[in-house]
Image (cartoon, rainbow over all chains, first blue to last red; front, side, top):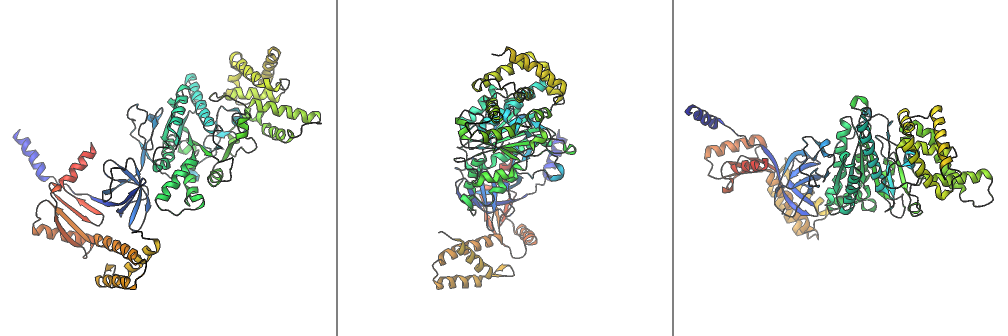
Length: 507
Length: 130
């Protein structure tokens, strides 16, 4: 025992602790969630700063004599003259599958009261997007379950598709439908033991949304059983502008983990208009020079560096993907405003929602003429291409011809009648995505004239009954379409038999 | 006092005029202050306010504050001064101060660089690690 004590004493006597060098500054100015700190000569851009009392800051401005820091957390306890230290770390958030089913804040801390998040992996919030050589072209579909989108504006895994429209036109609903659709597909593949199916995990980022809106989204996803495949990252309207500015980057980091590990993820940014406003507020408080509409000069770069992080990476790099669905809210349908034009030019297409269509009862209120998907058609299912290839053109012709009311020749009248029925077919109840094989069968029936004899007000009833007929009595046919991805002559003949049988019985 | 961009720029120029071999020349500083005051410019106080801030930061960069709980023996003081001069050059002035809050050990600050070997710092680090 005495030997042991002597050994310990000898070790204590020989112990040397070196004082590590720290970089320290003092708060010179504090207000509006921003601190100006003198000193901190070693501070890096986007470095986390320890402000004491468990409060963290993020360096956004590096100036000659001071640094501008945005404060993450409660800054009311800080005061002028307090010490601040560099940490040498960039802002990081926890990532991984343990976040699935959780609601977290900008720092990845739980907001749902379900206990701590068990994740030992962190990703930096700001990360350089995958380079050209790491990427491959988009060739796998994201089945949104919304017939108008899957048929005419298809989205591929790794694509960035903007959803744009005025307030209350159903932008968020489209995204929630897509998330529910992915959950249903994931569950179906799990139940069938289909190992070839690549599950698509979803991340919903709420930026400056009302808490009640976020709560409603969570309730819808929970009801639909989509939460086990989803992550919700929220910075509500009551959060600081700094948090709202950072939250989409935190969500992107969580999505990138899936992409880097060979999985597929989809991220919804709801919405980037509020994000730009939050960034404008931060920039103005930091006294950065303002430009058009008082936005800072780098508001384009803000969104381009965020959306560039969505990608499909090559086989060599794991074959993962991150699909982005950014949302932009327009004012009185003005798509030529500053932020909407920026984001339109960055993304690979847009789904434009019109208020007029919404109030006419066309829901989802997708304006087919203004909506486009620049890369998604390469990812569209061949069967869908076969049946829906002509749809967009037919609807465009319908819009042109619908202006002429009387004295029309039979062919023109038939085109108008077909257009009216297609418009009805594309109306869809919210939160009820339609499987792609059912969509193919329905559109095939429309294209082959089975709906032409149905009066327009009854088209939806016809569609609904036909879908039930298919799902309950012709499961094998649907499974074949899903499995083969293309409509062979034999399948077309079988579809014809089924459609004939249905039209004979339907009244 | 509101210091606008122009006053800041002028103060910075004046500050650079006061440097000789990247070191502040005190006689030049006094001369500059006198000239600005006598010139009677409307933004003179703002210029001098920012000029003073630049001087304070420069002084901090060239001053080492050595804090301890007890009086540091002369040989240790000399060793610390020699070490600081090796690292920061010969123009660092050292100031020794008494700070009981450190509990034990020494804390040295040169500009924004801090070498904290005090017991207080270690206790804080320990607290954070929990």
